[in-house]
Every structure is written in C-alpha cells, then in structure tokens.
Length: 234
Image 1 (cartoon, helix red, strand yellow):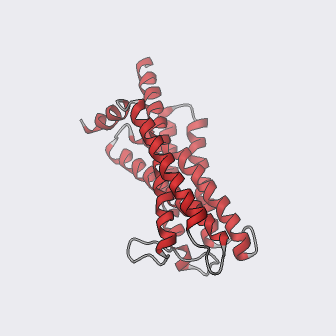
Image 2 (tube, helix red, strand yellow):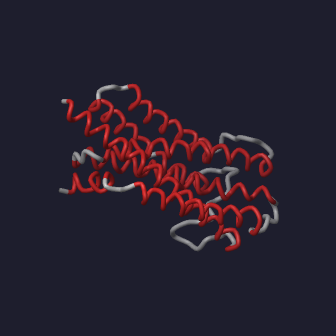
Image 3 (cartoon, one colour):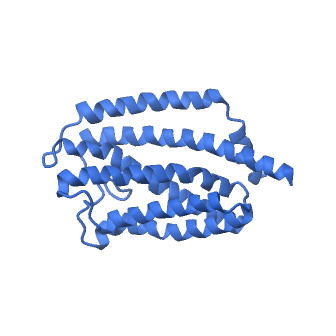
C-alpha cells in the first residue's frame, strides 16, 4: 500500500495547485528580493557584497538537501525495494545540480571582493565542486545507461558514495584551516547573523525551496508517467 501511495498522490496533483505554488513563490521571492537589495543593511566589513549571501546560502542549503534526499531514497530502495524511490532521486538530481552550480558561482562572485580571488582550493569549495561532480555522474548514469535496472544500481552506488561528502562539506570549516567563514545558522545553536540579515535570508530560502518543490513535482510526474508507460510495454 505504501509503495503506491505517494505516486498516486503526486499524479493526482492538478495544475491549479502547481499554479498556486508558483504564485506563492513569486510573491515570497519578490519580498525577499526587496528586503535583500534595499532594506537589509550592508555588512560593516564586506559592504554591499554581502547581498550575494541571499542567493548563495539558500542555494547551498538546497543543493545539500537534495543530495541528502537522493542518498536516503537510494538506501531505502536498496533495502526495502520501494519502486518510486529511484524516481524521486532522479527527479531531484537536476534541481540539486543547478543549485550546486549557483552556489559555486555566487560563492566565487562573493569571494572576489572578500578574499581578493575568484577561487581557492580550500576544503569547503573543493568539497562543493566534488558534490557537483557527483550530481553530474548521477545524471549521466540515467542518461547513458539504457537498461533501467542497471542504471538504478549504478546510480544508487553513486548516491550512497556521495553521501560521505556531505559531512565533509558541512564540517570542513571546523576540521581544516579555510578562508570560508563558519556557518552563521546551525540547528544546535542560536544564529550568529543579525536579524536584519537573517529575516530576508530565510525568506529567500523559503521562496527558493518552493521553487524547488514546484520543479520536483513537475519532473516527478513526468518520470512516473514514463515509468508506467515503459512497464505497460513489457
């Protein structure tokens, strides 16, 4: 029953719900943009360059979150043989890859005025680049391997191996000497960022999370339909 519950629920989602989510996303991102560009104060050291944070940090969170779900979905499918888990992972991969690329690009733009260079091979930046490589390898597996079962096995291995990189990304600033600043927001302590910057940051994170959800729902519905059609042909 559980194995068919989520796919049926996703397929029953209509365009009205998607359009409502898109409208909500536009409103939230517009508010976040106004706060980030015009209302939030410049940093006392970095100046207006700190505004790149409002795209960089949410993109980083989403890229890590997507791969974490991909890895967990792959493990669940490996253990419990839940058929729709690979489709969830496959649908999330392009979203996570795009946000990883945005994170790297905005980090480079932020690094130039802050560090004086576009890129340094420190632990945080290097591990994010490795994450992007895992995303590319995962997507290429599904693209190049035509047999579904084989593609599923190879992509599962890539996803599980990629999970080991996530703690490296998270704790790289604590484990090694790095130019990258420590995390301002953690689950175990109070934020070290001022509320005038935290508020628009959370708004942007929420808006981009809704954007990710919208893309995922559309992508997942497409993958489910293709999966059902391929099964009927067998």
